Length: 410
View 1 (cartoon, one colour):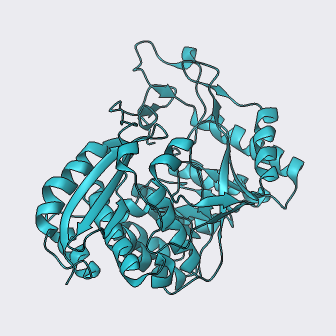
View 2: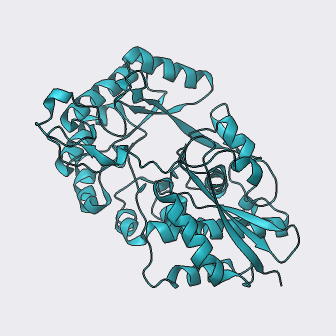
View 3: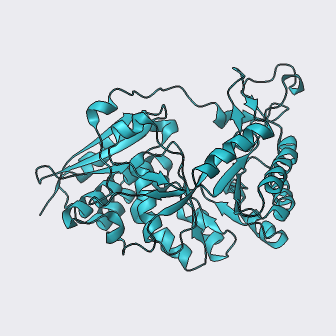
């Protein structure tokens, strides 16, 4: 029997975004597994959970018992399904799957039933904010947006997320704020709605119907305004409209489904199965978009993928810069083995990430490809990771405010 000998957590930021990697070492010399536990906004808390709670619980356990270990670690703290525990659990869970693949001498997708496609189609991000203004940044012009789109098209990308303003909003003018209003990143929801529709109309008119368009609202609208935006975007035939409502407002998806045929993707903020069950079983969404480490790793994600398949919901796993290359590879292993795959978000890797994580997935002609190494296929260079320490500065975009100074959901 091969057992868990040690569990370590590493924090590194090779592309200036904090990432958390879990390494599970075994009683078999040289055999270890790696998993993604990245919760960028609270990375130190996840590291503490892995080293001070997961490690004492799991050292000595049989590495082959992935399901049993997941269930035990999930209920060990009594309260469960929170982002800290789920990310820590994900790091261990994915590392155990990595070990399983190495022991079987198989890539992870073979353990999941084998490929149903050779590579995963991706979408890239275009628009949002340029960085010419040192205080807030500057909204891109249509010409700048077109340049980004042309660059992606030249690289073979056929799915593009179009944003006007950062994370579902545009910056309000300083003179709109009341006197004494709190500092923060201000945006105007009504202006955002108008200019988003205008921007997507421009892109559709210029590039035609062959280019697949997506848009992320990032939960920043009141529910009735979200319904209206979905209806106003219907003529432009989006591939999907993402995170239209906050998780607290999921009952409103019934209204959206009854009012428009715009395809809906949801789930980036989900932690708990109760958040997605109704949306899936009532077919109120078209794509599930969870952050896999946020729900506890590969074990629950595979179950979620199969649940979605039975209700004609496709996968679109969260894939921004705050997922490690290990986590991105797990996304793609699932993409290759899932019949109901929809699309994969793709942020790309800088040179620092490629140095720290040998074996990163590769983007070619609009598709992301894995290597055929056993397990997840991505390694971790601990020495190189030390060159890229994480900043503990808190994010500002999660504290956006409306024109009158009211705090808004991110």
